[in-house]
Length: 329
Length: 296
Image 1 (cartoon, rainbow over the protein chains, first blue to last red):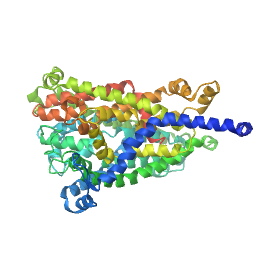
Image 2: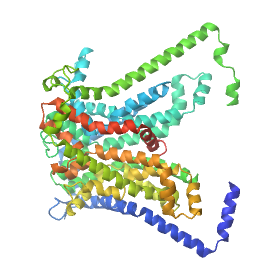
Image 3: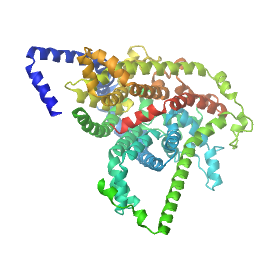
Image 4: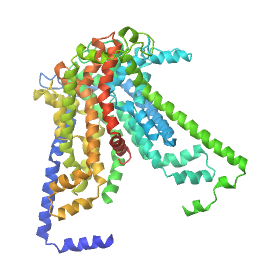
């Protein structure tokens, strides 16, 4: 390895400088050529809108009349006078906490059961992953049916074991837990990621530890957990960001349970029942694209950006570490 | 390692009774974990089974609490096509997903190549920007983007959903880069020494070698766009002609509110393509998913 490096270094130093700069120029041209669509796309679809969102947040804008500078008015309104934004923020915070905890623990639990199977790992993994593929709008519709209080199979099963099933998607106190169950049902991707990490934990470590008399709980804390912690961190941050942008399931569940006639155009049923499914992104959407308060929606987007950027940064830092390792290799 | 193999196996030093107990424990453990595994699989699939069973019921039975269809009405799957222009929505979905996937591959393969096989300043920085773009909620940039598409006169069409993929799709760039990194640079260097240009090295050496990774990326892109609801709602919500299936299915229940059997038949129909896709391409899916988490 070292010898090849030395010969390479020797070769490159013997090459005349002009040739080297020409090679560099060619590399630069190639990079620009290969990256041109990506650079352009990033600027148009991320760079520009991020900055423009900040600008619009200081204006009143309805898409028809030119934006009108109003300073901090949108932010003042958001933090003081507008009541529903608080409901929406509360709902999203609820999801960020409960959904993240449930999703990660559930995926970890299912993955560790699957990892212990000697035969049929592939089959069980497939079955558990299948629901994750279902289009969220369709999956939500299926759940609204399964959990419907009149004749839904879920309440029937609960009745069999003597539990009086609730109103689920029709009850403001039960709608978010029902949505959480829906998300857990579709958390197959996280399961597969955790399962892969679990199967990567060297079996010798477990054997050695059990020979030393460590029980299953201690082995989990001291061997399994440390080796899968990067993947768990990914799962937690990923779930938080998923919860922060929770939109489709909330909109479809709200309007399907209420029996809305037109999901796409009707704001009457958004957030039903009683605004319990009105998440922050849903309210942003309604403000911006139903009421055309684009300035106010932009202010909401700025706040969402600040919160989600913090979590994104955690992952970016983690990936930066591995990116350096990969490039060094 | 040698230490471990040298120590005598504890079971062999145990008296026969204890050894038998140990064997029984092992068997019990096997049965318990497998029973649990089977139960999990059943729980996950059960909702899909109920969707199907309800879809083939008569409409008054679907409104009762019975779980098993007394008569099997497979014609319900045809009936839904008469109730709503599902075929049109299906075509829209196919156009949206296919073009977006093609665009994503066209733009992301060269970008991922440059990010993994050429060294240049700012490489890591742009990769970090890609990760950030992938993670940020889409609602963060939506106000100016919508404004942009309105000014271009393209709202109501599926162009705003497809065009960005021809420039930059953060997830595809990310996933392809991760795949490309597993292919040794030596192959590229060798091709270049043989007189290949950078572009030829990509199309003739890297792309054929990275076929599984490219296939996985294409499937994820297809799946994401097939399932997407927010984008179509935002840009085509006002124009029912251009609705994809995911958007149409959400209003299906409203339009036919009492007929749960037909709603479930439509739900089953929209789930079917992705499930079939998965059955045929399971391996790439699983490989791709583990790549997003573990390698990142």
